[in-house]
Length: 248
Image (cartoon, rainbow, N blue to C red):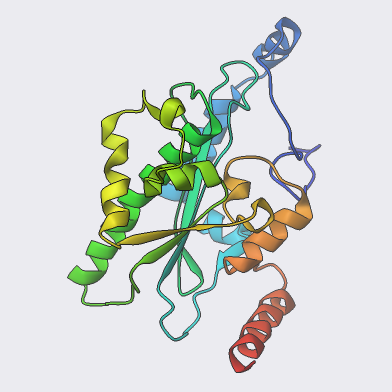
């Protein structure tokens, strides 16, 4: 850990990793413990036996503001075959309640998709099931915060047309998709969710599927009320900005 240094992003922008070479494998064997074991040990300490370690090194946190009910806003995104080895895709989505992050996920898919439409469609399907669960949870808690239909932002127009059942959509690239995924059409028809086209620049779930530059990451996290906790001024500035937005 003596040569460790802080970085502005978890990964370099547009970084792609390849399998280790023989030389790299030999270097790893020289270490007393594998990378996976070291990370697992740290996670066990911070989550099970020494939770105070997490509080000592935490640098970011979620702020939940007291605002008028704005309902749930969701973002769905996926890359397409960015893994140079397996050509598998990574899906990512998130949901915010009153502008505050409450649900998020990123996952490498187990199979290879044939088009960007199929990759985005799978991410949209997974997100829809989570939004239905979130709405049912709110009703059980008698919160009634969700404003229906829930707006889901998507940056792939072909995926939106496929989900909406557009008659002009060429469905040749979707004929092989499992029928279970098409339940999203029923959800849209029942007005539970509404798809909204969003430019890639405004896609807040972009950082969940690919490594992005620092300005993009900072902007997206700020929009989701994820702020730095290391400097008190950063939190105060964010709070003041939110109050100014409410009065404007």
